[in-house]
Image 1: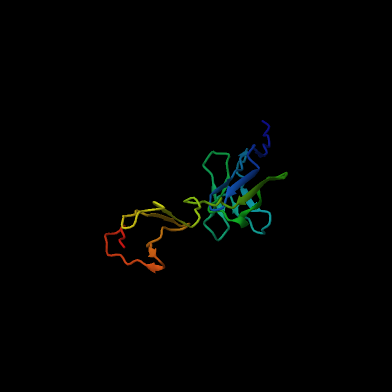
Image 2: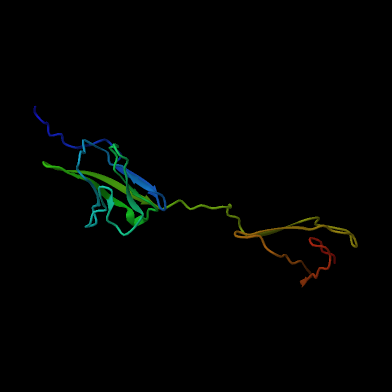
Length: 174
C-alpha cells in the first residue's frame, strides 16, 4: 500500500478588499488538504504574526480567526477597521516541501460624509402685502431657516425699534 503525500493548496478566494472605515473586514483564505498543518496570517509590514491557527497574537480583540470545523475557510476578521489597517496580508501554510503564501490586499476607505438634513443657507423671508391702507391690519409672515438649527426666537422691528409683544405667541400688534 502506497501512501500519497497530499499537499495543501489554496482555493480561489478574493484577493482585493475595499472596506469602509469602522466596518468589519473578512479576509478569506480557503485551503484544501490542510490536514494537521497550521494556517498563519501576517501583515507584511509587521514582524509578528497576527494569528497561528485560531490563536491570536495581537493585543486587540479586533482581530481574530473565523473558522468552523471541517471548513476549508480560515478567514481573518478585523472589526472596526481603521485607515492604518490597510495593507497586504498574507495567509501562510507551512508544509514539508514548501511554504505556501496567499497575498490579500485590504484597502480601508473613509466612510462617505452623511448629512441628515440638506444644506440650507441662512435666510429670512417676509411675506405679506406690500401696500396697505392706513389704520388697516397687515399680515406679515416670517420664514426663518438656518443650516444647523431653527432659531429659538424672532424679533420684529418697526422704524428701527424692537417691538415688545404682549400678544399670544405668533402674533404681534403695534
